[in-house]
Amino acid sequence: MNISIRDAQREFSAEVTFLNTASYGLPPRVAHEAMLAAERDRAAGLLTTDLGDAAVTRSRESFARLIGLPADRVAIGPQVSYFVGLVAASLPAGATVLVADGDFTSLLFPFLARPELRVRSVPLERIADAVDGGVDLVAVSAVQSADGALAPMEDLIGAARAHGARILLDATQAAGWLPLPADRVDLLVCGGYKWLLGPRGTCFLAGTAEALAALPPMAAGWYAGDDIWNSIYGLPLRLAADARRLDMSPAWQAWAGHAPALEFLEQVGIEAIHRHDLAMAARFRAGLGLPPGDSAIVSVGVADGTAELLRDNKLVAAVRAGLLRCSFHLSTTEEDVDRALDLLAGRVRLPATA
Ligand SMILES: Cc1ncc(COP(=O)(O)O)c(C=O)c1O
Image (tube, rainbow, N blue to C red; front, side, top):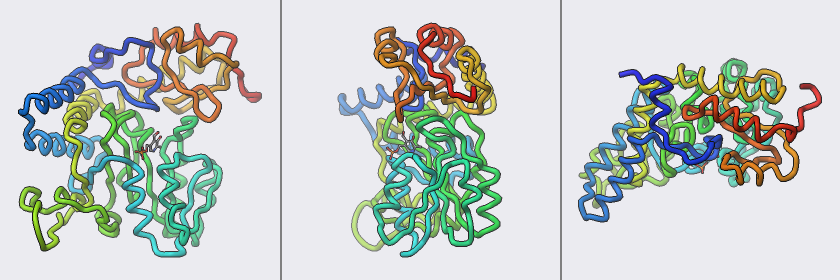
């Protein structure tokens, strides 16, 4: 069943003008209810582990379809930094990791926390040119958290192929609105609580069978077992053969709330969401006199006191890296954008080139 953008928008119930998906996503009603129902079941003593298992399976399969990979190449966990830590742990001492200046620290700190790795940081727009024979891994966000800038994916994939480097793509600010070349990168990590509309506490790691097999199952527990419910006690080690060997045991309520959100996104379709989000961002940019852009996140310099003014007028956006960051997603309407433009009139500092 397909859901139109207009019908999808009826499923959100924010009480404010919400332009803050880059911080956290709003749940569609069906997902919000599912999470609350799981918590009500817990209070009533009626929660079953079957519910958690089913929610994880549905989430894994839906995410796999969203990015176009088989579900057996998708692991589930709680946070991005945990999965990036596994990637960092898999690299030999002396390996070189290329990153983008100012990228989100969950993608940087796990490498920096291993002093025997070399981490080179370059401006995002130069990251493809900076790949050479000495680079083992490029770790970069598909969309930057601070300002919405898109990584030069095609150039990067070409450069990595030419020099034998691997790519770890952080899709946390991208999956859910931006079509991604998931089948052409080695590893893709994605937090679930932003553009994928999940609660906090869900995350995916996808990749090629070869890249996944190279990762150490350092935090393996019962849930990484081949037959989960026969893996809860005793020796020997009996991990799943596929990506599930990297799974961490699930926060049940979080996954109960995420499965319906992912399926909802599938029913609307990423292409339609991509068009919608960019149309909302374009309306905002045009209203401010900014040049056209390619991101669902727009960051602008604003006069002092703007964050307070927006908050007092029930418009929720974020201040990041000294800029006002507005994000435009499925729930955003033209009225939301126009309201933001009214409130920001005369308060935005336009870049010199605009
Ligand atoms: C690009 C990116 N990666 C990861 C995260 C979250 O990381 P973690 O799941 O480790 O909290 C964020 C949150 O803003 C992000 O923007």
